[in-house]
Image (cartoon, rainbow, N blue to C red; front, side):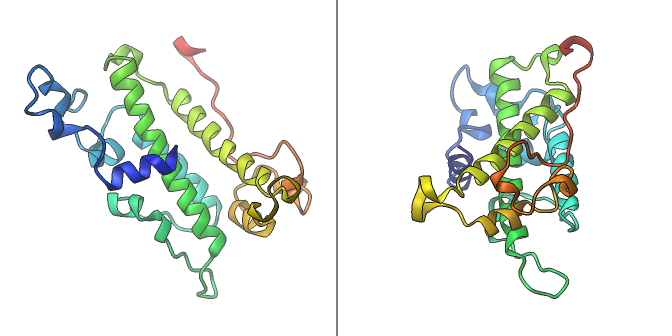
Length: 209
């Protein structure tokens, strides 16, 4: 899960980079084979030039700016401290909906970057001919964000979850501003089906079409 990923990152629980340096026959795992530099979580999430992090952060930026706020410079501290974000609205007051959305957006995007790295390195053997296309990265990220949106809406069901249900207003404040065709949605859109964030999928081209 994304929560587990963030916990493991904070506690340096992933076997990455220097961990492999002194293990015979595994030394090559210490290096990013695409960039030919020592691999670290910072490199994976923010620096690697293999298809992945740049595409996904660009999507996250687009969705955040739809929320009406300026995209901050991303760094490792901001990623792992995203739950502490304190976004101010025009009145200088803390925007709780934006804070919650920022936490979801940053943590889910970071997790997707890590998963795309694992797919490239482990499942596809760092083979450049099998690197993920932009459409593949785009659509997997979009599916992840839309799934989180739908989960939020489902968790507002008080009949099913009782006192553990999410507050409807909290969920709406989190996602308002980033939904597709908001003018066509009812006031209480969480009770409907078919709502999505306002970034469309990409149609695959070439070998993955």
